[in-house]
Structure formats: C-alpha cells, structure tokens
Image 1 (tube, one colour):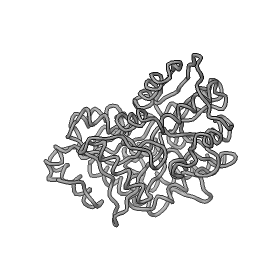
Image 2 (tube, rainbow, N blue to C red; image 1 turned 180 degrees about the vertical axis):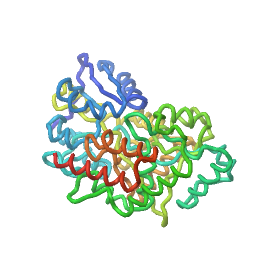
Image 3 (cartoon, rainbow, N blue to C red; image 1 turned 135 degrees about the vertical axis):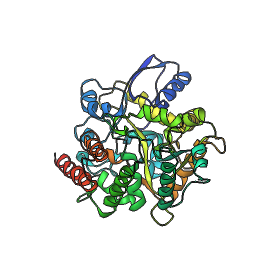
Image 4 (cartoon, helix red, strand yellow; image 1 turned 60 degrees about the vertical axis):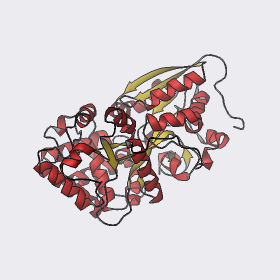
Length: 409
C-alpha cells in the first residue's frame, strides 16, 4: 500500500459493533458523518461481556467494518482480523510513541502480544483509578487525595465509621467489576511488567505471584471490613454509576471514560486520583487503548481505516476523545491537546495519564489475557471471593490454572 485510502465520494454504510454504555464511539461516528456526508453508519451495540463471547462468531459469519475488540490473540490466530501494518505505514502511525500501539501488536499465530503485527487501533488511551465524591471526602476530613496505600485504607475506615459506603463497585452479572480494584492493588504492591508479561502470554508468566497474593489478600480485607455495598454481587455497571452520582459512595474504581460524564452530572463535586503505592512514589495502573479492529473480510476496510486515522488526527475528533471519553487521544507525541477546564475531573485524569506515562506504569487489563479469562475465570472467582466462597489465594490459583489451559489451546 503506497497511497492513503479514502472513503471515496459514493454512498458508504460502515457497519459497526460497539460497546453499549460508552458514548465515545457513537459521538465520533456522528462527527465523522458530518465531515464525510457520504458515510453513514449501521451500529449494533452490546455489553463488553457479550462482545467477548460473540467476537469470533460475528467476525467470521457477519463481519463488521469496525468492531470493539476483546483480547486479540485468538482472533488473530483464527485469521479474523485485518492486518493494519499497511495502513500504519501510509498514515504514519508507526511514528507515534511505541507504547500507544504495543498492546495492539500480536506475534505470528496469535502469540505473544506486545510485539509483531498491528491488528487493532485505539479510539483513545484510557486508564483506571479512583473517583471520589468531594462532599463525602470533606465529611471524613480528606482534604486531598491520599498519597500512600495506608492513607487510602485510613480513609476507607473513616468512611465506614461515619456511615458512608467507602467503595461503590459493581461485581454482578457477566463482568466482575472487582477486577478494577484488584488490578489497582496489584499495581500498588508490584511492578507492571510482570502483569503485562502475563497478559501478553510471555513464556512462564504467572498471575499467582507474591505481590499479587498481597493484592488479593488486601482486597479480601476490604471485603471483610464491609467497605463495599452488601449487594455488590448483584450490582451492574449502570447501577454503580447511578449510586456514585447520587452520592451513595465515597470512592469508585473506574476508568477515565467516565470523566466527561461526571463533569456534567457532578460539576465540581467529583475528583480522581491513582491508587497510591504501598511504598515509593511511582504509580502504575491499567492503561490501554479503547481497542477497535477491522474484520478480515470487512466490506469497507479502507474507509474504516480512514476513520481510525481521523480519530487520532482530526481536532474535532480529539476534542470528543477528551470531552466525551475523558481520555488522552491517540496520535503523535506532539499532537495538540484540546483545552480542558482546570479543576475538572477530566483535567485530573489527563494529568494522571501524563504521570503514568512518565513513570512507565501502564498495564493492559487483566481481563484481556485470553479471550475467555474474564467471563469464565475472573468474574466467577471474584464473585465467590466477595461471597466468602473463595480465598484470595484460591482466586489467583484458579485463574492461573484456567489461563494455562486456555493458552495451551
């Protein structure tokens, strides 16, 4: 490929398969149509857990032009995704910071991840951390975010003492939301490289490490202390957001994709910080592209690639990534950043993102280690942990056993 592809001038209908509840992709699609009037969209939406289960069948039997993707390895192994290296060359994606695309590269035959061919692109670069209610924080005397894990634990205890739910966190249905605090705790106790090696399926990698056992034990301690809602195992993501925005919890582990939403629904009343480490001052967290790919047999692959490049390069698209998505746009290191209101949640998440980059603390999501690890391993094991039916050590042992079996297959 030597010339940049286009969407042409004839009518085009791009078929998209997006994640429900997250408005960034739809907002970008609408703006793209404004700028490219010949392009329309036919969009289907599902929860991420459903997309994870459906991805192989949909990509094989009814391939969309653009799709929100779960873990990449098995999809690449089965030749279901389009190789994007040609697009990367003509659009100049290879000149972006390598860390932006690392998680989207896959080796021959689907392993390992983190190197090799580019098979996906991000609509932005998202990150998880801790949102907090500033009014409730004042109630317990928290005037600034904690800077150590011990200080965070103290805030949890104070909230419990005054009758405030310390953490509102979903853990119900097909997606175990306790993976968010668990991975943040893994970052607080250990190094991100070991987590990434496991997610990228590097040889002999294990999630069952001393540092991760400390993290799982710490999470179990929060559960025993009553720091979560009693009905966390029955709470879905939407209910968690509603409760937090209604002031029914001091903290919430979630991603910066909610920053724009919280700036509108809780103006000046919400804040964000990274979970601080047990010791030291370097921080790490789950920070990954909002991953989208093009089906190997997509009808309008070139136009879908134009959209992906436009998302990273167009000023209006980058503004949407920040204002709606609350996340750092993809693209060249020197690309201009949209202006954000100082003191807003979005400003705080962008600042934390810059610090994560400086500390080299980005990890992929532990739910992305294999195509089925989230639905079949993390979710049921974390639900059992909350219900008192599994030990923290047992969670990691069980997940590692499932992982080893899935990687072999």
